[in-house]
Image 1 (cartoon, one colour):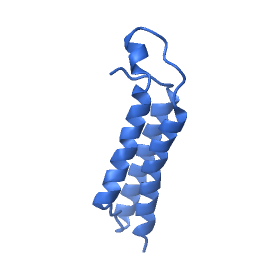
Image 2: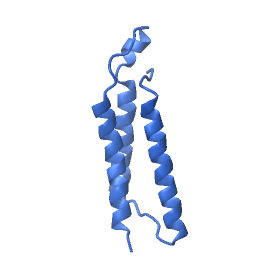
Image 3: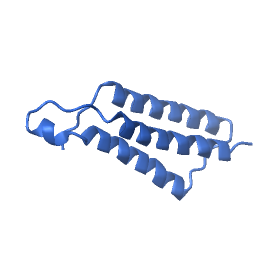
Length: 96
C-alpha cells in the first residue's frame, strides 16, 4: 500500500519519538525509569497503527496514479495524541 501525506506528518512523529527517547534516557540516568505496562504498550502500538492508517488513507488513489485527497489530520492527530497521552501518563505514574 503506498503511503502519502505531507512532510510535516512524519516529521511530527519523528520529533515525538526523539523527545520520548530523551525523556526516557534522562529518567533512567536519574534512577527513575518509566514503567510501561502491557496495556500501555498496547495503546502505544494502537496509536502507531492509527498513524500508519492515516498515511495509507488514500493509497488506492496513489496506486492508480491519481493525486491523493486531503490528508486525514484528525485520524493522524488521534493516533499521535493517543501515543503521547499514554507516554505522559506512564511518566506521571512513575514519579518519585
